[in-house]
Length: 226
Picture (cartoon, rainbow, N blue to C red):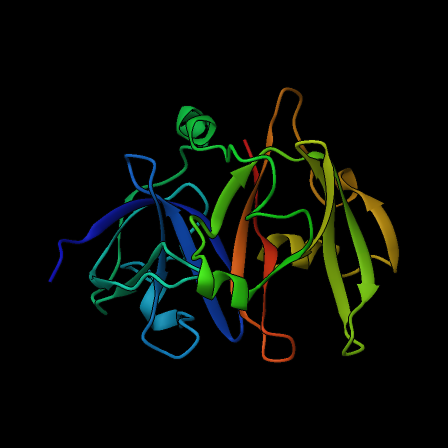
């Protein structure tokens, strides 16, 4: 069994009835921790830290892993071993700024195009090089609308490398803060407070293929303010 993996937690987002947790290793490599369930979501007993703590952004965590499980749409996946996770350090957002800036996504389009999804069939032919991306969004704001199921949906609108995106939000803090907003577009400052000189980062994640259209959706899995 591989040694436990240490990572800086940069995403602890909603996935079905569980969580999707991902981050960067000390060498700046992305990892996504998954279970052996069909959709890979983690349940509370699997991601809780010793002492019952919840993984938070910028926690340094030591997690047991059993094996790598790269997929055509998510090459960063590692299956957890089931051993309790350990907290190595907490609360170092500012101290991690250099690592974040070094890890910024360099391609000019998010996962190969300028839309909000990638066809899974294309990824089966040409696997994704990455399904996690750290970006510094320009002019971020929120859109509250109704999705095709008739449910309230929170989306983030922003520019990246000269192109505008509108992506669903699974960041739990963002969802909670924006849940009371009326339908329509709202400034970022109405949901999050950014201190003077602060920086905003988004972690963009590529989802599993959706059953209704076999597409992998780009999601704002994490909203980070440093």
